[in-house]
Image (cartoon, rainbow, N blue to C red; front, side, top):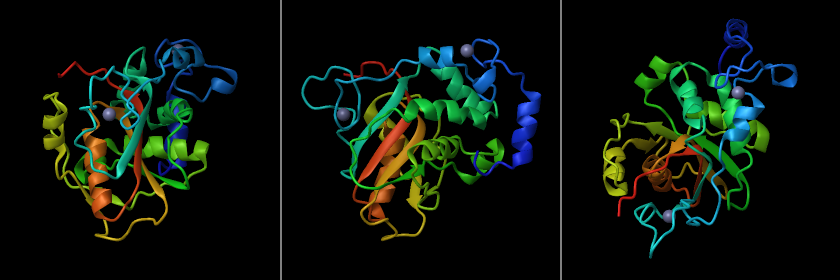
Length: 244
Ligand SMILES: [Zn+2]
Ligand SMILES: [Zn+2]
């Protein structure tokens, strides 16, 4: 979004009717530039505690949390703003597939309410797309979210730390272990070891959390490059089937 030319953005606004993407209610006044109206945004259901302090999964746990057991040590906390329901799924699909990066601003508003248990200065790191996917889509949806969130949190965005080596095949397998195997090696640090931003918490930004496999793999690459503390934030969290 931030690197979309102004003319593209203006054109997008001209072509789009000023109505809510989800309920088609009219957008007026200070909501005229939005994609989703306040009523629909209020229908998104926040993810609330009690949850696993590490992965933020609120399902009741018996014994150790299996969801985050295989995560790299550097990935200390992940939180999601809302459940992938009540129109949040449609909003994510619009962000990813309907060429509406401007909707990132509506999503980031919900994300900005999340409190990450990170202390000290932070840097937002969008989950990168592989170059081919980026060319096809024209923008990276995680980058659009990171840019919109950065404006609200007054944080820098670091796009140069991570590269995506390959896209992940559609994640049909649902256990945390198979999802981790599915994304293994998908990311690489851009500049080899030691690039890290000393003393900074790196906050990975993505659209949807399902088992956290993508965030875990990206954190692994950052850890290899010397990052000590990595957190993650996503707009939505998918309800996953019980895999026990
Ligand atoms: Zn609406
Ligand atoms: Zn957990």
